[in-house]
Image 1: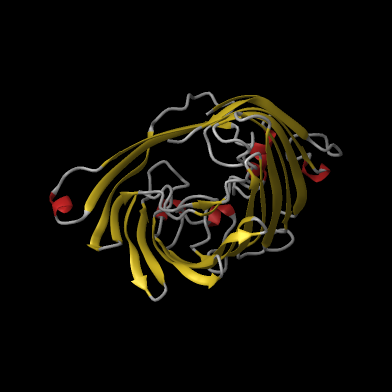
Image 2 (image 1 turned 120 degrees about the horizontal axis):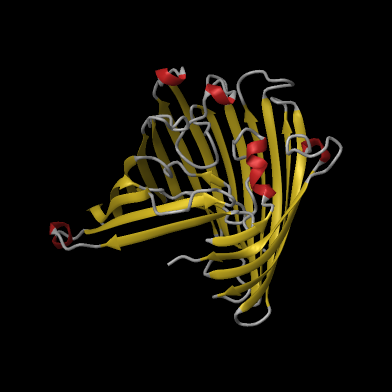
Length: 385
């Protein structure tokens, strides 16, 4: 949650590219919105417990509202509601049923979820912990329904498969990922049924230059090309896609360094090549490159001084436009951990400045030769429990 004043212009960058969420803000003061989630978990006594399996129910309601919106944020959305069974089929093998975010993946430094097949799905089920050779397998079937009056909600079913814990090198582990997507027809929107697939891998290194590093590579084809950066909804023709030929490559890297209690650093970089599958103004592809760094210094046991810098570059052949945006944030933090670059609870007093290249001026309402600029200042609270 947070209170923010000024011009949180960095949040409008995604709309500049058709709302595809390609330019996701670096988190420090970049999320000009209020988010609130309330979760409850319960492990009831049942016949499952007596049989050696523990059943846990989880129910999460939440809400979010952007800065400047007229409506008040509330707990009006059921984000998660599922039952999880530990050791259900055998020791170490779990099962779950219901609505679940399902292991969505991001680097925390930015607001980009490079893998979030379950968030926003209406229901699903899965099995986790299946032994196969040196690793373990997770299987999940997820379902998104067509919703009346919600054009972004396109019904479809996906199968998410992950093979994790594969030893790659000393201190490193590899995870393999596969996705099958079946999108149903939507006659009201003129959409025919479409299929697609995704493949990928990520490597987590526990001891790298005094910190830890995660490198991710993913490829999506057809209906597995997503509507945005987070959620189960496939892209569609009204956004310019031809799902017969559409595809997306993405490479992400996130590095964490904490050499002492009083200092930490996060660095991230990504490259994405999105092919719409049809010819646009000057081609069929959109290229997005982004990198950013955050440093946190512990001034006292309770107060940190933090700074973050990020830059994004987009070359959009489809709409024949290119440009960049950079953002700098400086803040004083009252935190539960000294010098921690990630992980709440934290209270931030921040100031941010963002500036776009001149080519973006007309799209953002500035004079044709001006480089538009925006700033934001305020207080933000981030907490989990």
